[in-house]
Image (cartoon, rainbow, N blue to C red; front, side, top):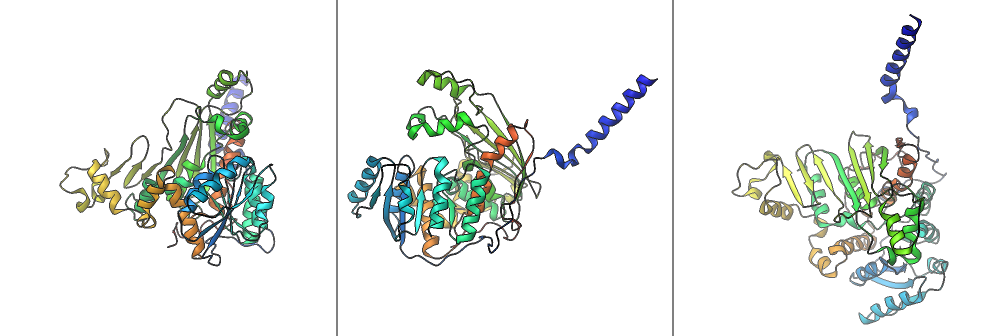
Length: 462
């Protein structure tokens, strides 16, 4: 009888634990939200005085810097003041491009890893564009803001929670724009879909998916001093989440009516990159941290879910996924673009003579094309053709840079703020924290410190 009683007691304890588990907040690794320093206020919808001619300094002329320089050269009202890179040849190449296009040479800075400090201190610079390695992004941006400059930072803009909060505080303190150069939110499909969402075509978006699936074997050696591979060797988690997460967060109005509450990450073991290091460099790496594939699930305050994936080593076609599931429709970019809509949501003028359209399959191409034309986003209607001519990931790089300059010239809020930067970058440290704790749920801070529902949806200034 004692044995039976012990078993019953054990069962009751287990039942009690299982019943309470979903409500037990102690299972979640809690976020630390530092108190906002005295005298600071949020920078939601931050607008600064108009700058008719935006004077720009570029720091980092390796892989991404030249693309941003090309965009700037094609936007009226931009003066290119300074070019900075560790390697003198990169500065010289950039200045030759300027001269070949009829622009005056910019002041050049090169020679060491600290020369950028001279650039942020220049008195004749309004905006500093940072395209260096990941680990130096936040450091340069912090000094630039404290030196009185607006900053635009390549992705990801910050790699640690400390860097994220430092950037937020610097932007709030200095009242300077701190924007991450997340170009994928300006992809024409993503922009058109965002417009559809904002017009109610997909109903309420309840689930989104994004990713960075990109075999980097042909590109690893292009990263100066092997910095990107080194990060993957020493860190788990998703180090490059913003391309997939950014467009989904915009469609879900994150910190504009909803917020991300917590995440859970899982990963595979590391095979592909250690094999690459063995084959290409003869190294036997047994402690490679980053798994081949990392998956992260996110839950929001309003009951939405987001799936973000990262894989840069498997033999898979490039994909950012970008899927939105709404109560009235579905959007999908990879592996093929398409929309599925409830029949009631299909405009007869768009559907034409098609009958029996339903959400069980993608719309026919001609209907999809007509739909995309109807819902083309207003911010690209006048610049789409030029964007495609100038180039940069099909034109989205140009749209991104154009929009940033346009808003600064007109004293308007930028399309992305420092809280977008924080939310999209926080997956870098928080996914690693989840994985190092057996895939424990990790709370995502409210980076606005209470302002996540002050704004009524995402609105691009025009």
